[in-house]
Image (tube, rainbow over all chains, first blue to last red):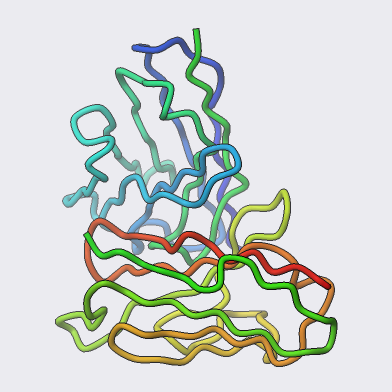
Length: 114
Length: 112
C-alpha cells in the first residue's frame, strides 16, 4: 500500500524558514518523480514544485522560485521541501504527491504569521 | 502557463442522477510523447485529493465505474453516471503535460 506522510509544518514568522519532509513507503521511491502541492485555507490546489526520479531535475512555480528548494534522499525514501523567506501568502496545507497526482499524503499545515 | 477552466463551479445534483463537469485548457495538452496528461481529482471534505482519472479516460485503481472521463486536445469532461452521497466534494482537473503543472478552480458537487 502506497503511503506518504508529511511532517515539518508549523507556525513561522514572515521571513523565517521551514523544512518539510515526506516519508514514502509501499512503492519503489527511486523510480518515480515526486511533487509538492499546496492548498491555502478555503482555496484550490496550487502546484509548488516537482523533482525527477533521479533528483537531477527540479521544477518550481514562479511564486516560490528562489525561495523554496525541493530535494530527495532515496536511501531514506524521503522527499523534502526547504522553504526560506516565507511570506503570509505561503500559508497553506502542503501535500506531497507521487508523480504529479497518483497518491497524496494527508498534508502538513504551514502558517506564516507574526 | 496553461490555464485550466472548469464549469460549472457549483453543481447541485439529485442522488441517483448523472453529473457532468467540463474542463477546458488554454492550449493543447497533447505531450510530445503523444500522451495527454489530463487528470481528474476528487477532494472530499476534510480529506486530501484523490486521483480518479488519468490520461483523459483511465480510471485509477479502486475508482468506481460510475466515473468516466472523455475529451481530447483542449476540452475534457468528467461524468458521474449516478451520483451517490459519498461523491460530495470538490472536483479538480489538472494537467501535467507542461511545467508549471496547473489545476482548474474546482467544481463543488453537492446534493440537492
